[in-house]
Length: 364
Ligand SMILES: C[S@@+](CC[C@H](N)C(=O)[O-])C[C@H]1O[C@@H](n2cnc3c(N)ncnc32)[C@H](O)[C@@H]1O
Image 1 (spheres, protein in one colour):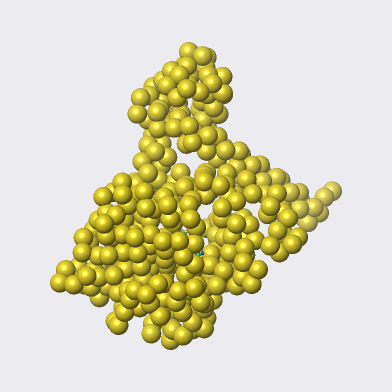
Image 2: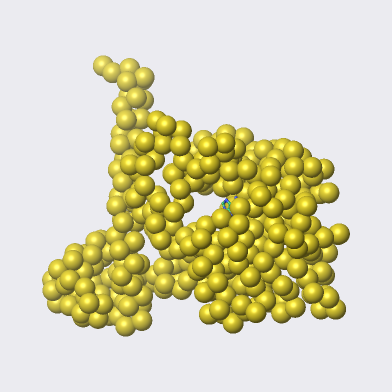
């Protein structure tokens, strides 16, 4: 007769096998979603479906056999619906919500950045394995073009839908400053990535002048193109710069650090640079991950942040040999310490509610 302990450990084994299997299913499925995104298959199905495998592959100039196999995978996963068992004659329709979740890049539900980021992270595994031995970093640039695209895709929906409409109105003095058209207001978007936050601000407040800074050249050249495409390049500049080495000679009324402080090799120096570059009465806002205050097991969001830190943020932040990068899990106390070391008196956690972000204001 087996003891309670044996039964419990057998159950634990079965549970863990089941869990790892399901996570493996998800990991492989994100791979086929990635292919669908990169080849525009979801988009074409949404715009022109129902389509046969032949019609879909033909319209994209792709191999019919692979596309048929891809449709089969997505049909099993429930992202497309087939109207026939025979894949060679079936017509395929996207499942409800595919448009909102995987096609509409500025919609609030768009999450296509996640499969892109996963593929980019897996692509650097050999370098990351080596980094675990050597303690070196893995440069953002090694993650390939998908990395910057993924990063922008993940955050742009919030910048389009929430930055101006929801977040800024919850900081009344800042909202007043940004809507005061009697003077030019200078804004810095530090770690600006592809520039989407700056572009939204420029569209919403036409009298702002905004400088975007990022240490990644690819991001800056794409940000410049994005600003031109959106007709706001006359009020926006984008420059390659390491924020920890200063923010030029300008004095800014608003300095934003949107999901970048935890990535920086020298966050204290970057916070000090913001102090030096702030105009009298100016505001520094930091948006970073809303991680729990203490190590927390069993919460998927915490696991997401902590695993992203291992595969993405920490290796990128450790490229500089004297790095003091925090990684994704930057708890409030840790950030408060960074701000104080940089000469700020304290940080205020702003009452802006968001499942993933916490907003801080630096206090002089
Ligand atoms: C997570 S991404 C966020 C990008 C953008 N703010 C957004 O929300 O889409 C972090 C960005 O910080 C940039 N970055 C990291 N260290 C930096 C530094 N020392 N100075 C300037 N930018 C930096 C990276 O190149 C990257 O574009």
